[in-house]
Length: 202
Image (cartoon, rainbow, N blue to C red; front, side):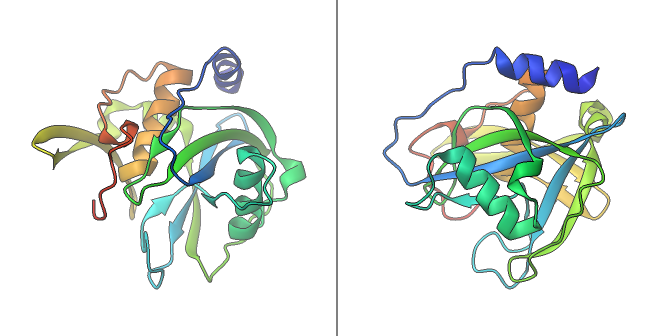
């Protein structure tokens, strides 16, 4: 039932676009097709020059050869976690956001089989892990961190799951997905929706 609602909501959702004239990127929000659906996350390797140690969805910058952003998300997911593109059923996307490095990032949502074997590209990642979708709907698991940017205050949502902290842009994309598809009702007033958001350090 949960996955049915997710798919139905995305089919009827008109994603936000940002006319920012910025380089494009895409991430895949992979959901397992199971009685207890899970989301797939990665953790960036500590030796990476950007986003080291951070939790993220698989994804990256659009290549000139990518025919569209769905292609970008699937190509990057294959490179990062060995997820075969043909095994992903794309069901929609959510609104574009701006990263602190000046990228316009589009989240693409796809369903994968729960037993799909995944393998981390150790040159970029040190971990792949899954979190039950229901975990994010329990308000007990939600925390807020204070951000101040250009004299404006923001309360940014984040989640702790075991040793992992899901925060920043990944949390923004996650929460918007939850609000759109599962009526999570989590407050989200993030600077990441603004084309002037180009912080170098969160």
